[in-house]
Length: 491
Ligand code: SF4
Image (cartoon, rainbow, N blue to C red; front, side):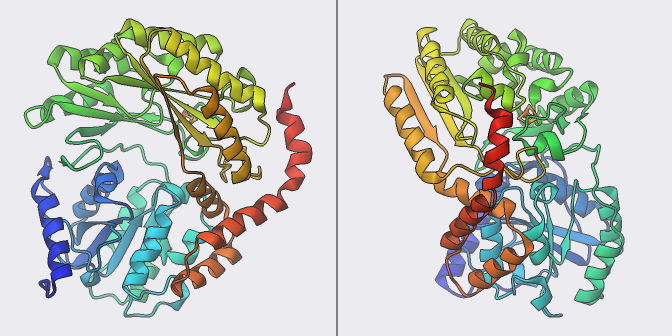
């Protein structure tokens, strides 16, 4: 292993060592395989260490006897990229496996490849370059760009089939042989029944030192804007006994647990798990709640876990919008959830909304304002609205729908803000600029992907090109406005 030779590399080396020294491993991850795989999460350590995919991949890859997998995270300030497991620099690894879950993380993938002068387009790489593998949630719905970049794109969950082909890779193989081995044996797409849990905890992760347990994957509800409902396969749940036994076995190390699922409240035994946490004095947090399936027991467990606020997602401002989204939630459900929150002692509530759908109008947005005011009237002292523009994604029924232009979204946002300039109400808008980039990256086609990669390789900022691409996609979709608006108008 090469030691750092200059100040910048030392700083990077020390930062990685420091973060690593604060981690506590729950499971032994020792591995001595010859096939070295870099597991790269193309976002910060704080975000990547809180993603169960990092944990699951580290565990499953290292269970393949011939493989030795180590973790890497993205930072704009990194240049050498030292492994979080052995401090080995990234360029000593033969296989670079990226987990891409969010569109914008793709820009970080490009940045890492550029830093090591690795061609972004797979066909321009030669035998001296690493094998670039791409997996992650984005492979479920958007593949044009990923297929241009990844020598191997693994679609779907990390399946037995993929691990099988990984185990066939030998460290003496050439790059071409590795790619051929990993691409010929795959079965895709694959939905795995095996759910994940943390293999380490870190105080520097965005969830702090919580032990994460995936209790469910996939969602049967099929809200029209949601990739999880349409692309992540049928719902699969962890058994109650397994969940509780896992908590109890980890409790000597940490009593703080985070439950992860597309919709935690759809877990058939959520109340039993909440009761168990209350009884044992465990702290509980959850990734997402359906407001029409909240229960006193769950809210009580969250409250006892020192959570000062609870979060609900009406998504659509008006009933018409929620119906158009197929959200299956009524005004009555929202009020009931808010009441339940107050009864359980919550004084802060966060509400997620999607705004700016092509078929939305000002009356729909006014309902967001009304609900926020109602929450204040019910005794909440802090009402936080998270407002996110609708980003029509491939693989959902909204594929093909235009995204509202940024100028209009800004205007809508200003109106909502002015009508809610009240003490106790805070509004967080998702960055509109980033939302448009997400839209462009999710919907980009093969030809434009190639063009974009060419620009990025020449060091040209991709933002203006992606913005232009988003506008082009929208202009091609004008046809949708003629028919789609009617379908969803409902007035
Ligand atoms: S928004 Fe939530 S409830 Fe709806 S499909 Fe997605 S995960 Fe399921």
